[in-house]
Length: 468
Image (cartoon, rainbow, N blue to C red; front, side, top):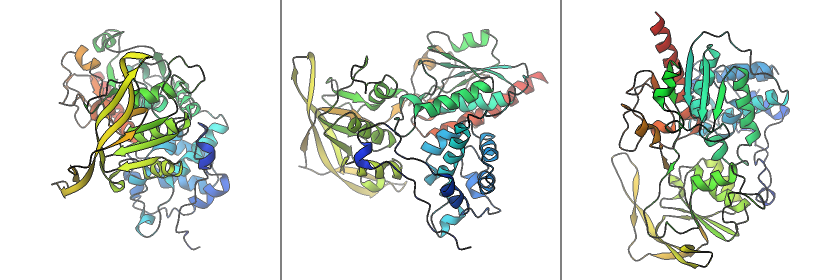
């Protein structure tokens, strides 16, 4: 049978419809499409896609199960390596990982691995099937700080080995960035809740509204009998540009804007934690978070939304799919532009700070490549201009929260505040491991999961070696 050269298209909500709701944009493969896409897999002997996956999912094996219509078997193959299959099938950047090294991609489009993973996970969840039986307890206890992707993965992998795991989460809902950062139209919160329930079925316990460093310290966790601690507290400290006008009331960090919307339900008519809706919005940045903020502002009623980014479309760090969706929805990309000031006016409703009336910026051009090959933006003299806007959202990255470091003696961090670890995830404190954004700063969900998986293996070795 001749190879189908292109991926089967993902059905989507029409742009003119979806900009008025928060429902999921990508609708998922049906069974017929999934079977056709699975047939594109060559099941090649070298399996480069597995090594391209940060959590080493046995990709050809689960796709082979799809071909056999053994969808639960496919799920169990994925779940053996990943505690969050329905999440990864939606937000993992497969195009730069497993799909990038797919053998088929040497001549054609790669197999749509992410879409098939989502199909398998959604089929499993639709049957309300259990992820697996609870393993026999091994008598050891581990604490996990943070219920984001790295923490959930570490907890899940340890629970599968029989550890009693408690996850401590500062917010009132487990999920970390999966619930406060990624919008409903990309990742429905019911999906995250289902993944958390699957971990509970394995025996993982969750303690919410607990701030490690305030409610409890790392030292107190050890005093309570935990034999190891994994820190997956994320990177919740937003960065700003330190330009004039950032203290105006309608200037948000993307972190705050998305948390208020996704977790605190600012989209309601009478929310307890509102955001400014409507008008013209400028989002500064070019990553996935910038796309999320821009597309969320549009759904909250903005009349016009700009993406302001200092490099060109070719350098945008956001996923290609997210950029395409933003373009389809009418987001206005102002590229090779860099803000220099946010202009405001006196607002009777908030006389102390005032409100935004414009974003002042300069045009840029890309200079010569540096040693890494990356071309840095250079200001074009005399190119200053203004955009009339009502709201500015800064989406230029986040840093690890310094709370845990400041309350934990002997925990070393780098100049950016990231916890320093070795290749196994061990920090400078014995028995304390870390991973994800708390180490690297803002990165991808799947890279955080990979770090949680690595640390879980190291924690298991550490505790078992102590017994010998």
